[in-house]
Length: 121
Image 1 (tube, rainbow, N blue to C red):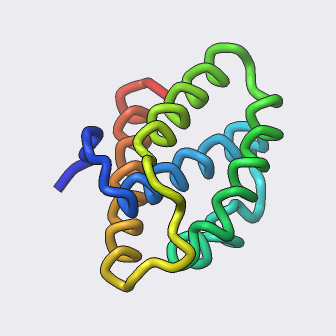
Image 2: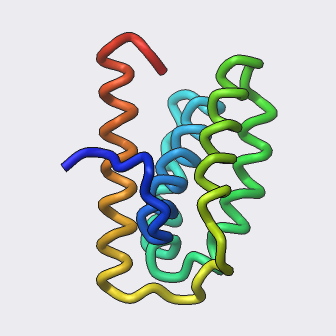
């Protein structure tokens, strides 16, 4: 199975968004030892309403460090994903939804690797 860029299923979108926010952090801080995945993945997966406001705030600091093209690329991607969120973030997600979050995360990460292999971002 591959990335479903058309999906608006909230847990999947949140997983993808988490992967993008992690990528923004890594681009802004090359060689960072501990990413948001190390600190927040389990919490973001289980209790997104608690963690995503913090991650979004952090991402704004990271985006300020990026140059115009890369910054624009990530801002568009974040905007697209956040635009798919039409409900309040859930306080808790079921195990099934946590699994969907993880699939969305890994699908997005894999897509980033594909682009890198092809000479993209």
